[in-house]
Image (tube, rainbow, N blue to C red; front, side):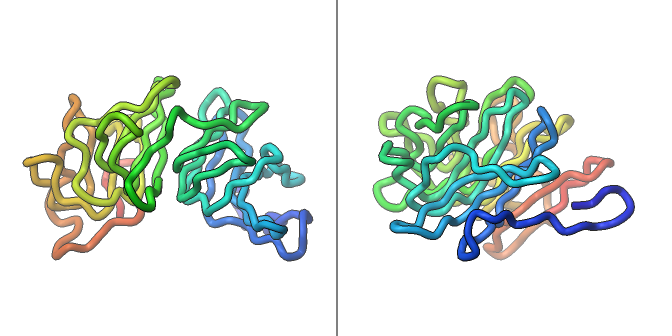
Amino acid sequence: SWNGAAWSVVDHGAISSQDSPGLYLAVSPQNGFLYNTRLYQGAPVTYGVQYWNGVVWTQVGAAGLDEAPYCLAVSATGNVYVGGYFTDLGGVAISGVAMWNGSTWGAMAAGLQKAAFPHVYGLAIGPDGLVYAGGDFTDDGTTDMLNVAVWNGVKWSPMGSGLNSIVRCMLYDPDLGIIAAGEFDASGSFPLPSAVAYWRNNLWVDAGTGVVTGGMSVWDVDISDDETTIV
């Protein structure tokens, strides 16, 4: 962690010497706690989420995911959202996304689905509490939503015509709104050649030329103070 002057090591925790700390991080806007994913050795191996309060790591809930999580987001009210490639959470059927409400893990309706191997790679939370998901999926079990979707606390909804290939990351910026990046190059018939798109007025709009070319993909995106999009 960086304290403004120097880096210091954040302890991996002492749950097991064989456990593996995760690669996916999120910071809670409610209390500043650092959340990450973790692999727990056992029979069977499971995956979970933990948080660092500045002193110790604490596991979030006892239930374990059957496959790897790929992204995390924490809301201003303390809800924790995890996305990835998983179908079970402590015996509860889950498809790619799950939510911790402060006391229990639960499904988000029927999740985000695909005929084979649905993945959620990116999550972002807007100022209104809506949760935006991007990945490799086609529907929520009933309604088509191509690789991007929004959760209103009750159900998933499509975002326009969706995006025509995998979304690798999602981001909310106060000035630019919701941003998606990945391997796509169109939303319906509307071209998005940069593989980075802004969600504006219920349409996906290209971030502009000079981002990526030749079928390359964007795996992460951030916004500088002068609103320059960095990939």
